[in-house]
Length: 157
Length: 130
Image (cartoon, rainbow over all chains, first blue to last red; front, side):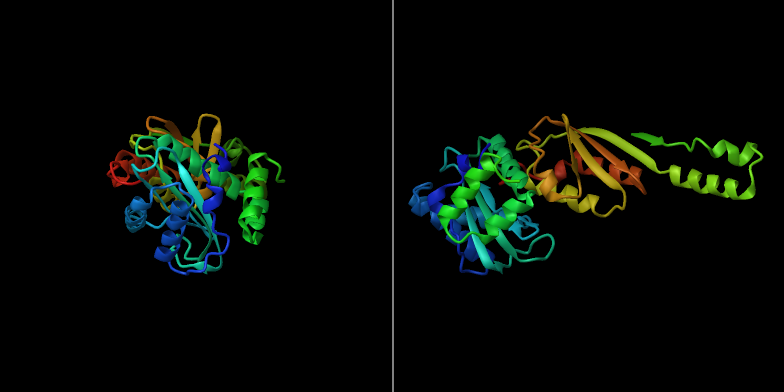
């Protein structure tokens, strides 16, 4: 699965200005709502579901990355957004470090395979140090979308 | 559980050969080093949603408690079980068969605890969020 198959370009937040987990999740879900990827009336329910998932264990997986997510019946395909934080977000990560790269995923409950393929795509590219470096250096949504396209096309070293 | 102890091919010289003392000492050291156990076992993913982030996190945290190398192989891919970024690339769906392999100190115990984790279904109610 390609990153551009499920990351919604219009929902990307290149300069996240909040420093709390809840603030970051709210901003990212709002981004998906504003892009029309989730119904406006479901925004609060999706925020609550993502926060509930975080109570089961942080999705801050280390190396400054978090992957908050939830299943939700209001979507019929996997949708995701990216947020970047220069100052870092306290995400209670596994390694105790603050988070600078966030991928938030919302997937249909009946398609767990898509969720796994989305995670695989994200982690496969995050293992590429060039991808991480270019991503954290990006300042605009356009730069991030260009990077996602390059990553999908295996154009990064 | 299958435990293979690699045998030192020169250890026989320690006991039956008339080697000089220094060489015998080297052989004994090699014998001890070569007794590094390798342990592996195949498990099946029973979680309805497959091996998602929560069980992956439990695997990484458990594997990190051991000094030995711990790998997971699915099909033709092998990943480091101590790395979340590696584990996330597994894409192991419900029913997938994974080969757990440990190499080094306490390898058998590492595999025993990992198998126990899989058999407990990670104590996850998979009807909830992944």
